[in-house]
Image (tube, rainbow, N blue to C red; front, side, top):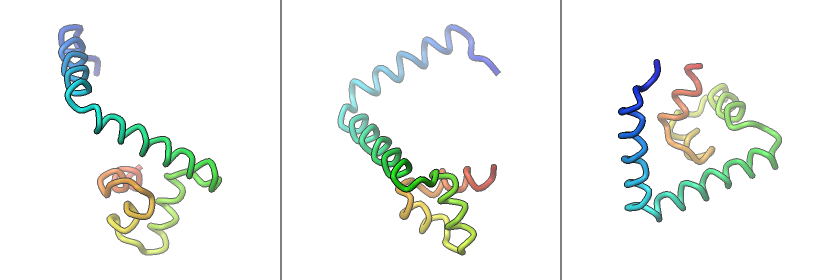
Length: 81
């Protein structure tokens, strides 16, 4: 499904405004993202593979999220695929 041009423009304006108002959150998001990527590259195991392995070992969604450095909703989404 594709957004209309007006909807895309409204979304762009909202995102730009949010970024302007929340520079610290944006900076922390970027730091977290690249820390996870570096850990993934160093371990040789993708985040998705690590989540699946921990799930197979019997850890809860929240325990997995804490170990991987994400939230339990993302863990749940990855496991549903």
